[in-house]
Amino acid sequence: MKKLFAEFFGTAWLVLGGCGSAVLAAAYPELGIGFVGVSIAFGLTVLTMAYAIGHISGCHLNPAVTLGLWSGGRFPAKEIPGYIAAQVLGGLAGASILYLIASGKADFEMGGFAANGYGANSPDGYGLTAALTTEIVMTFFFLIIILGTTHSKAPAGFAGVAIGLGLTLIHLISIPVTNTSVNPARSTSQALFVGDWATEQLWLFWVAPIVGALIAGFVYKFISPEGSAD
Image (cartoon, rainbow, N blue to C red; front, side, top):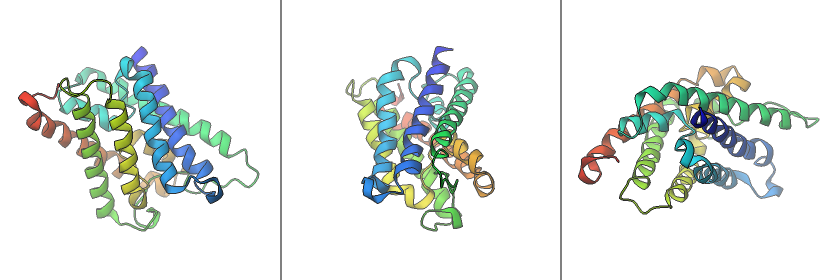
């Protein structure tokens, strides 16, 4: 139960920090945040939580990460449902807090609310194939980074830094394409508030990250030292 609470609060922080930077600050150039700032904010949420709850739950904060760790032999199947439920609920909690804050402004409009999309709802107009490819590939490399930096033979104590910087880089690459998901819980939390097109396109932001993560787990077991992901 402590692990599930940790995943809940950690995912809430990821959504509040990452999506919050996009909704509350990115639209105001004078604040100096913008596209790069949002990318850094997402990386910082994972970096900070890696050291805050990594020793409690492993700091997955993401159903795709949980499933990728399972396919890499690092996580027991019996704990998957609880982790994913905690992550989705945590994401919704973070989005709810963000909505309460954002809607406190007199001229508030929901808009995209940092939701993920493709086609007309892609930040730069990228289509379905580009979005699907981006989310699969970005999640694949995110899991490779996670599995590699947390391997028993990797330098100790630096995994959180590498994972946080990896997520920052992923956002720098893919925000223009899909507004960056690589995380079904993060996508669900925003889509449920936006509704309409966001919920219609949500399937991609579950399917693609999970596919990329599962492939990464199997690949890392093959390439890692001694044929083990541990």
